[in-house]
Image (tube, rainbow over all chains, first blue to last red; front, side, top):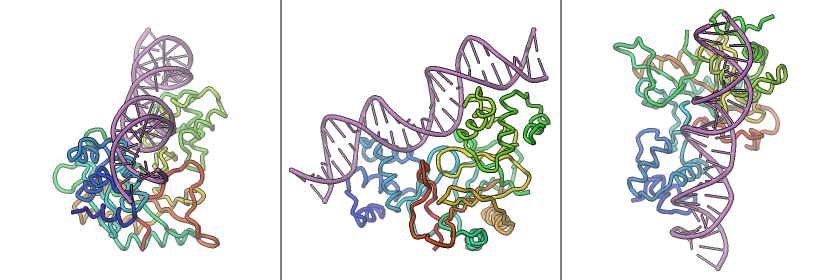
Amino acid sequence: MPSRLERLCIEKGLKMTDQRRIIARVLSEAQDHPDVELLHKRAAQIDSGISLATVYRTVRLFEEASILERHDFGDGRARYEEAKDDHHDHLIDIQSGRVIEFTNEQIEKLQKGVAAELGYKLVGHRLELYAVPLSKDNDDETALSGRAKRAMPAGGSDK
Amino acid sequence: MPSRLERLCIEKGLKMTDQRRIIARVLSEAQDHPDVELLHKRAAQIDSGISLATVYRTVRLFEEASILERHDFGDGRARYEEAKDDHHDHLIDIQSGRVIEFTNEQIEKLQKGVAAELGYKLVGHRLELYAVPLSKDNDDETALSGRAKRAMPAGGSDK
DNA sequence: ATATGTGCAAATGGTTTGCACATTT
DNA sequence: AAATGTGCAAACCATTTGCACATAT
């Protein structure tokens, strides 16, 4: 059965190739926020002939068709997520790299208000919370294992 | 007279070279959020011998010394701003590219609350509002002139 | 004097692209 | 058949780095 993303592609009249079908399926089934490399790896597991370039092209195509969302969590590469209607923001666990989705109506409203006060109409926003698990041993700032360099923003540590 | 940033460098015991002094001054005097290329251009106006590499190294050094903030507004290059005590977020005018700073205590509080509810301690955040000026002719989505590609996030258009 | 900074050019890493061939409509 | 997509390798662009030389302490 076609994945949700594949169906959307067809609705939009996109030419459906094997590669796109597979990438669409991989994206539809993803529960995380994979980067292109990971998508390629997953797609290649289904059909090893898919090239990295095609994944890049497809992901861009889908994004332009508004059926895929691109995120930039500050670690250099882009991460992707199937676009659903439910808008949400992200909390990034800087110890494990895990990304948690959340929504907060109040914050959304306040954002619109802030823009209005400054004489603007809000057309988009980006809100990311960088955090560490409560509980136990959180005294070290050693985190973000692996390659992720300088991922956390400077300003917002809250006094 | 030494720039504020130069003074901070000295306090931190950083070795002060001509280049660093100049870059510090350029940063201290900047009213905008320049990228490395622009910083280099401004620094070169004072001493044309400063290399791009040095600007990159200096900017990184300053950031690690917490006297400079790096921002990523989604257009590929990093933008910098002297670190002051006053924390603020940014509203990006996607028509002109202008960046406006703002603070909102309520939003800050709510963020901390959201993190807490999810079992996390907030250690940083990133909030950017992408907006267009109210008033007149806002019907076109043609914006972000120049090289800036795909700068606005997908999700947050607010219903 | 010693440690550290600098310029230059080459290297990196994620992403894009030109081209000849393959596939979808 | 016409238009478009794909793989490969080369190109891009922001940023980093190795090296020989220069400078701050």
